[in-house]
Structure formats: structure tokens, C-alpha cells
Length: 327
Image (tube, rainbow, N blue to C red; front, side, top):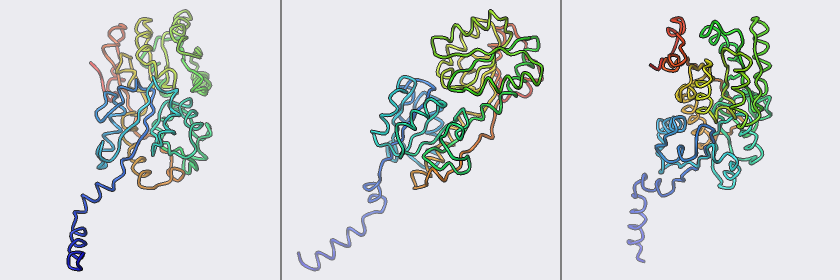
């Protein structure tokens, strides 16, 4: 090749648009999604039906990421939780996960290297052994917690205000959220409220739990968003309606499928904010140094249709404080 032709060739390569070169060199990130909020099919693709996963993708879009160009997702829903270890084998860059202690424990055993962003860990991640502290996690886990236990007293207060005639309140809980009953019991003793512990060890016991509450004469129910119970939200809301017992739940998705009321963190906002963590990690941040956040945005949602079906009149004092009332 003549010297003049070589110089021309080098010059043309240098003039190749930067955007085109970046597109060729760009790595498409693989993001694992683990959630007990529905089946895997509802969490798949750029426009999934699942509202929380869609909120996460919206957060990614707000940060400039384009699905398919910059990243793709590998979801695992309620029908694939047992296979979350597969994500480690797929060599995903980061995992976004919710589902309480059971799911997070599975991930802890599955990998020691893949960063995991928690979306609404129901229990204390420090007590679970997932982090050294909230400010300095020190491992592969970071993200956000739900403050499940801290808001238990507030939910009981709202429930007693919503159903003032309820002399006995049944508290559902399961092994994925073992501290709930002790916290609720302490609140009940301090306020002089009579509470009933209903321990649910598996999905097959959910229907029996409602019979236990009904037979005991419970006038109201407190139901958390623990791993086992939240994954059966539709069944639980339906059984509560059939049992004609007013219930307050931890998260809005229970109300979206027919539940009476919920008070807790805005779960969609938490999933949207998870994108901020993912963005930082994809840019090289160490999850061990990313503080675990606690939610600052809480919402009270009332389903007036569910109340009417129960023959319950929602007090104006609650309606005026509700962030949303489903007519």
C-alpha cells in the first residue's frame, strides 16, 4: 500500500462517527429480575404487564437506558423462584430482587459476586445477615427495605379506626417474616387490644387460616407483605371478602386485586428507584459502599367497593387522609 493511501485510510477511520463506534463496542447489560409479585411471563420484555417491574423499567428509561440496546432482563417470578440460582449461571451483571428473606437467602447461597439490589426487603437486612449495616452494607446486597415492622403499629391503629367494633384482630404471619407477631403483640399489649396469632407455614394453610380467624370471632385482619402471603395476594383478598372480615394490608397490590385497605411504602416508587442503584453498579460502583435506603414515601389506599361489599362505612377521618380512594 502506498504511503498516501495508508494515510487516507487512517484518516477515514478517525472520522468514523463516535456514536457508531460506541454502538459497536457497547455491552448490553443483563439484569436479573426476581419477584414474588406474579408469574414470570408478566415480567418479561420491555413492556411487561407487571406494574412493579414496569416501574423499574420506567426508572431505567428516565436514566437514559433503552431496553434491547443498553440492557435486557432475565425475570424469575412466582413460577420460577426455585430456579433463581440459574441467574448466577447466566452471568447477569446485577440482580434486582424482592420477596422477603426466603428469596434473598436463596440468592445469598447462589452467588457471592453478583451485585443484588433489594426492592423492598421486608425484614431487617442487617439482622438477616445480608449487610453489616445500612450505611455500609459491606457485601453484594444493597437497595431498599420496607420498614415492615416499624409500621405495624400504624397499621393496627388504622385498622381499629376503620373497624372500631372489632374486639379481636387476627394477625397473619409466616416464617419469612418471623418478627411480625412479636412486634404486633407488643403493640397490642401496650394499647390494650386483643390480638390473635395466626401462623401460616405454607400456601396450603391459607384457607385454614381464615377459618381459624372466623371461628375465633375475629372482627378484623392484619396481613403483611411477607414472602409467602404476598405471592398469594389474589387468593387472600378473595378469602377475606368471602369471610366478610375487614383487612388491612401492607402494600397496595393487595387492594388492586380486591383488598379493603393498605398502608405502607409505595412499592412502585421503590422499584423505580432501584434503577438508580442499577445505574451506579453498571457504571462501576461497589454495592458494598452503596447505603441501603429506607422508604420515605408511604401511601394509604382505600377500596370503597370492597368496603361496600362488606357493608362497612369508611370513616371520613380515614377517607380524608387516603392517598387514593378506589370508588
